[in-house]
Length: 274
Image 1 (tube, helix red, strand yellow):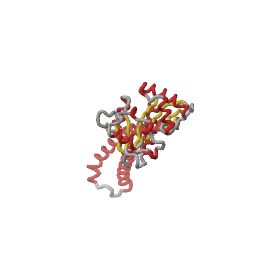
Image 2 (cartoon, helix red, strand yellow):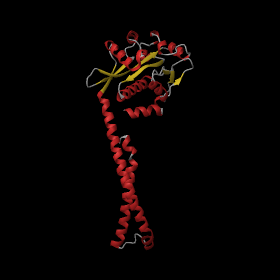
Image 3 (tube, one colour):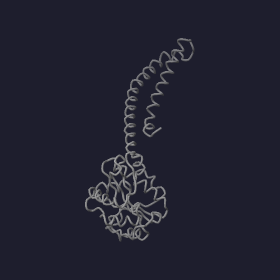
Image 4 (tube, helix red, strand yellow):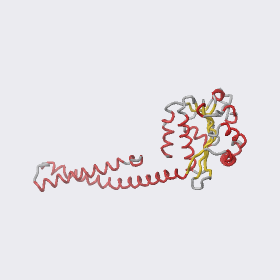
């Protein structure tokens, strides 16, 4: 049973319970009259039965339209959820080639302006670790970029420099701060997250969280860093529980822990998206 159906289980329970109660009541009355069985004494039948009958009828009159309405809403939500889930099949994620980086940078500049990392720097960092960029493509066209994210695996020295305030933002990260392999990282830095359209943005964030969840299984990784570059980015940083480092640093940190991705704020997002 899917979550949306579980949510409306009380509606079905109400309907079933009301039906059984009324059915049992009428069966008792009918049985006594038909078979002269002493199921209900005369006092109960004369004084209480009419009141219970009225109550049961009122419950059915009130409850049945309510159940119908709830079930109608439930069906609409299930259909909407199914549509959203089917949307995910229209996209696929992969690491780009070096030839695609020009397009990625131009795409990013349309989202955040000239503050986006330049092509030369991104290509140089890509040559150090080609898995730092993950792109979301429209599967219908096969090459239409609709979103992407950048994660840098940082060295132990970079972790220390950011924590001590020697690196104030992403621009302070140098090539030597980036590990050639994610397995050797002491920390992760989310450099960019962006997509075009509500669905694309949601799935980009979902893929980002899944990627982070995979990497933080490595106990060497002590923290995740990022900086909100836009108003939406800053809100996302707050929503997912990042803590701003001491002034004048512009970087926010999320300390790695085994239960990091059990936090309700993150689980709620993953549940809504998938």
